[in-house]
Length: 394
Image (tube, rainbow, N blue to C red; front, side):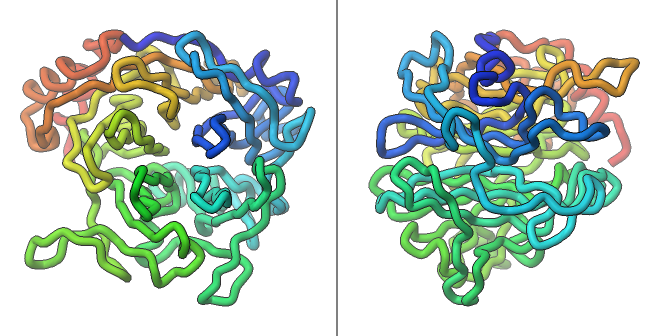
């Protein structure tokens, strides 16, 4: 059942020069340890109404202990004794008006260790945190790719766009690329492809998850990307130039899909994300394209208010997985953060139900989600949010 195991930030990260951070997307390396990348990071508080305290984004921590069920333990930080900002850029502008070339901040999306030893990381350059801009949560200038050829990912630089002869390999916030502003990177053993699942900027109402792929040797050649989509004849395929068709959409009407992460565990592709008011969900499939199991609610807002960015640790098993889950909660009567950090939850990913839940009547959907949810999830919460969403005007 879903069980809160440990707070992974705060006291656990103070020795690396920070207590407040979020995200924590975990990737395996060829060295046997993992690297977790975190978002906006501060000595003590993320409240930007005051002067930020040693603001850095992203930062990275390494971790090697295999017995993660007993608690994930951080070994060391990228940057030395004090975790430093991993990539070379300058925060420009204000929270509501970021400026080019790099935006207000660069939020990490994911990291991958390629077969030739190179590390690739993607980030989203924030244009504005103002929800009015996108009718969701935030807007971006682009998603940017960064490279490290350092053995242990200490030194990073911008990835050159080979075909464009440009120092920044970006996914622009336009055309098919706009569907990959938030993205997650996956390689399957024995395959040459990097599969990239992505969403539009922010948490757009009714926005979906898209998929593209690229040979790992040509990630810096834009023309080699292929987009997964359905054409007019109903045929699904990867096609250069697009178009893409969403492979998954929110479960509830006018719902939204938040930050996502993929892993390959025990022969299954595991996708985790926040599915609107339902909370943190997981779905699994044999292939990156699907067919996907129904959304399995792992942690709802009833158990962890203000949750976002669930990530399954790659050392997990399906039946006993460890999820990193962010929360940002504030005091109800004050503009003051009470918790901004990442916690470890133990969850069960096993699910063998394949149904299209979106078209179900509310009562049937409540029953399905309750049957498939992790044991620790509040069933009353599920019933309330499903009933409210299905009874609202679309």
